[in-house]
Image 1 (cartoon, rainbow, N blue to C red):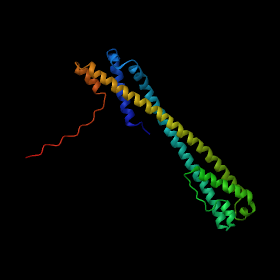
Image 2 (cartoon, rainbow, N blue to C red):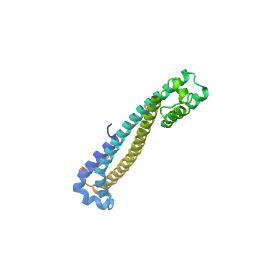
Image 3 (cartoon, rainbow, N blue to C red):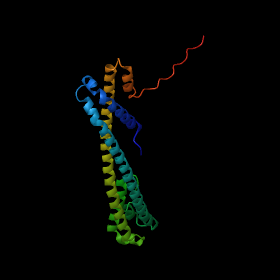
Length: 222
């Protein structure tokens, strides 16, 4: 999962500007105001750190999501297997309904799965003999409980990973915005400072990406 192009381009431009400022800072600082160059030089390394942190957080979220999907699928399979035994055993409709038979089960919604598991557990607690009669053993409910607990755990991990990813991305985006604004301001000041030094000015202008101009349509022939 690579860093995005906007970050890479901005960081590259920032490094170019940082090199130029080693010579020109004294002449440009009065034009941009106190703290702009200091802020830029502080934010440039921070930009890389926050970008890498955000990348790591997204990877962690992806891993957590895969773990959640696996746990959800396993629990869903177990619930549907128990429901299938109840349905094929033609258990009393009221008991089957208590066990959740006929109720929608969405593998993408954790609450739906946990509610389905809870219904089986409660039904078995109330009607153990009836469920045993259609082949549902205590071991089956033990597995449902264990899988429910596992899903709850990985769901908590996934939610935390999601929050961390959002927070890291916000920090990265804020640093990116500040660096881009500082680069633009400093290059603009260089346009004034080096208006009579085109070679030096060209080095600053090369920092900012230039939009490609579309070709002008040719004049119609008479």
